[in-house]
Image (cartoon, rainbow, N blue to C red; front, top):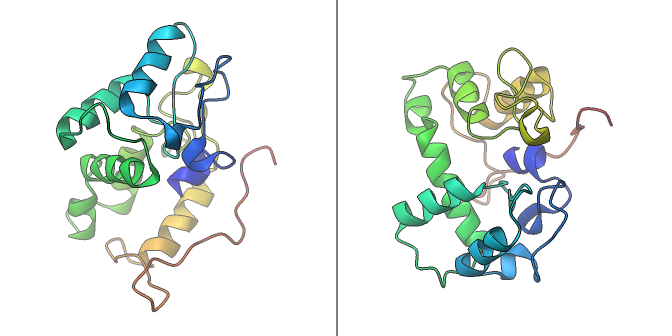
Length: 176
């Protein structure tokens, strides 16, 4: 759902739409060093990158916390590891243990990802660098209930293979 709100078309190879100068390769084919070089060579433009639209300061923070060398490929696996750490930062474990409500967890996620709406329906970063919520709060609530079940603390439903079932039906972005 986060990737849907953040990078629905580019997915793991998404670049912020406001970036006029793109990297020389797809993001998933770049090393972290190559991403930093692109950032340094293109000041003044947005640099959110990948499936989860990670911004430069967050990228550096996550790299350090995960102990990744600059030679690490920004592959889907690396991007997923980074997103998992951000989910933990938002209180995922507290949420699944019932220590925080789904609404609190959703607001915590919205403070990390600009495409997700706060309870007000607006992005926590509304208007900053062109950011806005890309889904409605009602849609966000509905999908979170589907992912985690009707209760506030249930884990994601499985399709029987041990993998989380994709939730693609009914997905619409604001303005579409």
